[in-house]
Length: 405
Image (tube, rainbow, N blue to C red; front, side):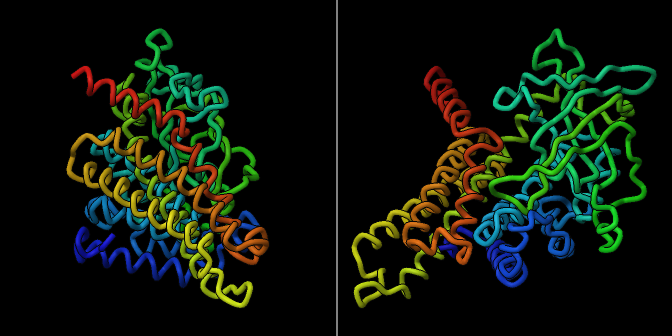
């Protein structure tokens, strides 16, 4: 893709800034953070200072005031180097902040968004439950209105930033007789689990936020990939949530969260695309210097075919991701296109990383090269924010609806 044909000077400047940050600040520590499963607080602070944690939000709310395509580009560029840093941006912005921007009241936006958009605290999104994964409508967490507040009981699982975050939007059933129309959403607050580190760095904690008793996170998940990203369960034990923390109207939680996931799928598509291209770049570089039978392996047709397939599919993925992003930016329907971008690019990330390891041969199976980490990071992209199977269902429904129309 000739970037000058499709992107503005500002968008290209954002690309170059994130690319430089990823290569200078992230690349040197990515392997160690992965091995230690350590959350990258130092770089999160730097990302906040660069405006990367509030890119698409208005400057009046503490954001950078950039367009959606710039935001998608940031995720894509970061993921070329490290997916854990990329998902930190994506989960915080699309999942943790956008529901408050899109469905919250003016008071809620003014109270919570400046903290999130500036990177002062991290946010998260509580939808998935132990018994409600692909079946998000199977939510069992309950919210009972009582004496001027809601009392929440239940749990969420596999929540990004569950430990390190302080502001969360979560779903709970307010009327079990109405199915998905009886699911509402709420803004909850708690204290970060890394309080000492947050106080040391001056980010990650806002004393003005009141931690809600009974709202806590569980142990950190020991994951295959995205190991420098914080993933845990959330627990609600008679948590009293003020009525004014209802996000949107009662019964609209499921619908609004599904809209949020549509945007999230563009983000995961961009992240997956970044992983694929990062692996491709590593394979291309390695093939040009690794010699076998007296010449670089890039001169062998078998390796050339692998590289050619990767490059072609990455170009196709770019068009899918940026088409969906363009539709979203211009306020046009994009649910089908987001599902297509997420489906294609997440599966591409797996294909590309496996091919990259093959090009590296035995070295690709070691931690001396980043491609093995990239392969581990790629797998969750086929699962999170809707599995590949769910994406195919979403796409098929749109196709059949279009046929009926």
